[in-house]
Length: 239
Image (cartoon, rainbow, N blue to C red):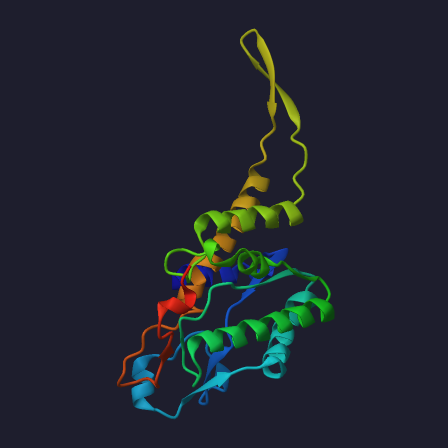
């Protein structure tokens, strides 16, 4: 999966539109390289140098400048940017808060950042997939109360395509077969390919990436990681 995601990133320079889903505000900072990681540090690295990595829980003042700098580079190239906020909730947190409280803070920060990015950068639009899910309540989530149901993901993707993709009327071409002459739609392989890629990317963002990179930290090894605060009861999220 890491290779598949890297392959998507390599397509960024050629993309006309880039879809960015904001996932969470807890980030690990590497003091050796001076950079943030997009996942938890390797366990072996933690054991080798316990002080190398530190957890940063970003607020708007910290997160917005980083996002503005990254997306600004895309905007300068003339690329369109479609922003969303992931509806997948945190199930664990490295902060000292309850995971439910940490999730509420995370989504609030990301939503404000998305609003400011849309207002401050050219070519940036916000698509309200987060609001579409949350306004429907827990009925949109799977039995784990974490992942959005596939059917509703498809509904969100369809709404996005209807809102942003102009589908031209199919051209008619004549086809002769024997003595019959009939009209069939002209091939639209390029359009179909682009639409299929957009659907695949959004499904990956909603279903795959939150597990791998974003909204759900991997289960840490107790001997190597700080305390993880999890939701104490599923009753908090019961239907």
